[in-house]
Image (cartoon, rainbow, N blue to C red; front, side, top):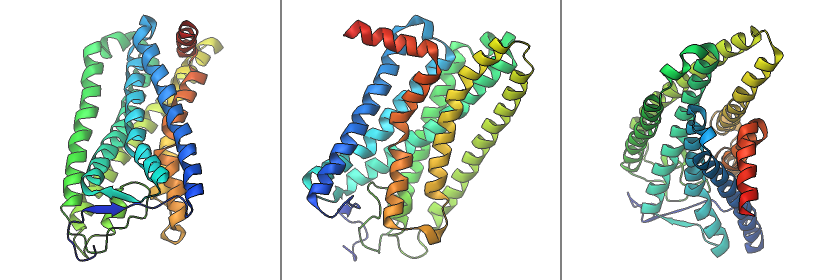
Length: 307
């Protein structure tokens, strides 16, 4: 495989050396995956069925749940299958698909979190103009722009990454196909095009982060100026879940990609990858259900109606 420019398959990093531990990881990932499916599925169904939740805030939350389902479904099922069958292989086409889908879903999620920050900014800082600014058409256009731009972005990244000649074998130091690990296999100097695209990506992510920070500075200033504690509590109840999700997203991704090279190891890379790619999808529904009383009531009504 070392002499092949385009390998027919890649070898992923296993979670353990013995098959018994691999089965343990299969059971753990199965539980996490089912929790993500259940939590996000309940949110999707509750928002779709309860007309009281047909607002811009919950429309964006519905999109966030779809992205969480997409991102965890891109990586975890293949990892579970490899653990169950005690194998490491993933086909070249499977790896390309995994890179494309993961980049698209994760990037769209961050863009959507930025849009949700703007929605909260308008709702709290400009409440009298909220209905005229955040119309149904505006919300749909913003969500479509987030989905469409990130899928185009994923096409560019994926095409650029897999157009590079690979001269360093086919073994990836990760449990799923990840661009930084694939670049390590490329020929010397051939990855400079992708590095340039990554720099543009970092600038875009930084701009979104600054926008979120700017929005919440104005939001907190507006909340502190509210005369009643009830108004402050209601405003915080709509903002804190989003802020928790943003903090979880940024902190796990920062730990994974911004750690010093001296701290890099296969086991640490594996742990950090699980934290930023597997942990958020099942945790995000819990955050929103605990913080948003109207969503909690809708989910509870849905569950009691089913059982």
